[in-house]
Amino acid sequence: KNEVEQSPQNLTAQEGEFITINCSYSVGISALHWLQQHPGGGIVSLFMLSSGKKKHGRLIATINIQEKHSSLHITASHPRDSAVYICAVRAYSGGGADGLTFGKGTHLIIQP
Amino acid sequence: EPEVTQTPSHQVTQMGQEVILRCVPISNHLYFYWYRQILGQKVEFLVSFYNNEISEKSEIFDDQFSVERPDGSNFTLKIRSTKLEDSAMYFCASSSGRVGYGYTFGSGTRLTVV
Image 1 (tube, rainbow over the protein chains, first blue to last red):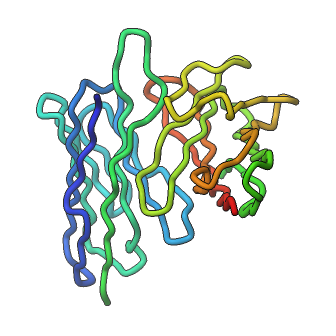
Image 2 (cartoon, rainbow over the protein chains, first blue to last red):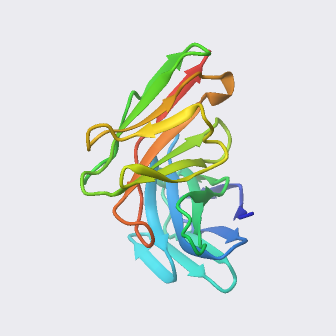
């Protein structure tokens, strides 16, 4: 069974701090997604990774396929970054698995 | 930027009633999904849909659930006889490809069964 674990579950930091959120998973995957969920509930896709590293603005996502681990970094954090950040993976199987398996999310609060 | 649109944003229904949740995926996307999130819990996969048929479904997606793409633009999730435990946020998502493509999620429908 595919498990997706995120750490930390909750993170409170001061504006400007460098933030790291970690994700580990238990099976081979074809892709890993980082998602953002705001209090209203909507989900926004931040990154889709299958290898290496991606950067968008102040957000950086990395993945190590061999270690089954990914990190999401936020540089120069800002109160508007406050949200739940969710890691989700698409397991790899011979027939192709469609559904994503989600982590529980990391609740991030950036204080001014 | 193209969006996935879900309606209604909030629906309250009585236990045992049928509900239909509606989604308009991005027009050139080919793969469609429904997920749900019970309050305070993680998001769970329900079903994926491609080429007018279900391509994968989870254990949650039992006989009370069905999906349809009735007119080439809408993608619907029907719950035949709602139960209290069906109360959740339901998210529709679409993707232009199956593997190696990002998802676009809708803003969700909050279903409350009373």
